[in-house]
Length: 297
Image (tube, rainbow, N blue to C red):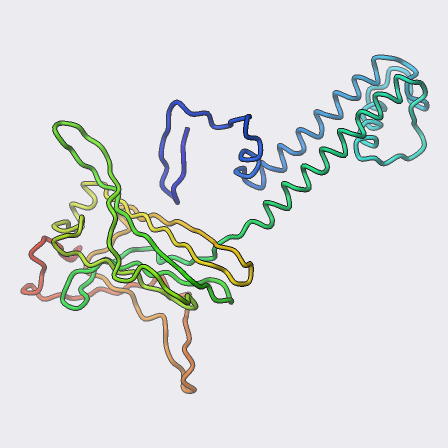
């Protein structure tokens, strides 16, 4: 079974993709396309089953042609939806019992389907824009990992917080494993997230990334995982999002181009179409960090 963490996939064994003891989790986790496909399949299955019950006893439905499964099927659809057109109706006690049972099933099915659709529509979603590349540049004389994000909604987000981690290969006493290291951010919280936010991790001696350059990042298959939480006052709910960066998406010796400016009236303007733009940063050889960080050529 595969599990997605952003664009990154993890493989699991020994677990079931669909745990039918928890149908709500299954329904909530399906994509919209598969959700409606499953909903239609269940509806068709219920109608086929009840149509077969109507066929068991001929004459149980008045107005139905003898032996016509199509008539029984369409009568089942009308009954399940609690809609009657008057052309066909139960004609004996057996027909009444089957129709009454189907009506109860139809009420329950409609209520469950309506509730699931409401839950899926009302689920709060973050509208966070991420720079396509993470960059490593010098900031205050130190190599610093930066990731720029933007608020893609017109409304403000408040109480925003971010966590950044690096998935790295390790080998201890002959045992190989992959471990996520926390990357300390210079500022991990923001009271008001209105425009853009550049997350910064200083790469010093205490950083798990110290001593790495563009080649070792690729060779070690190091990946970054960024999770962002914030409260959306419009929805009165917390939203969450996650983004991952692969080794080829971490640029050394580059910096982000300006995306925020001030116009003639003193108004701050954020151009979110520029959130992905980067430009090379020329660093003199004498300023290259001793830890091995170098510009990618």
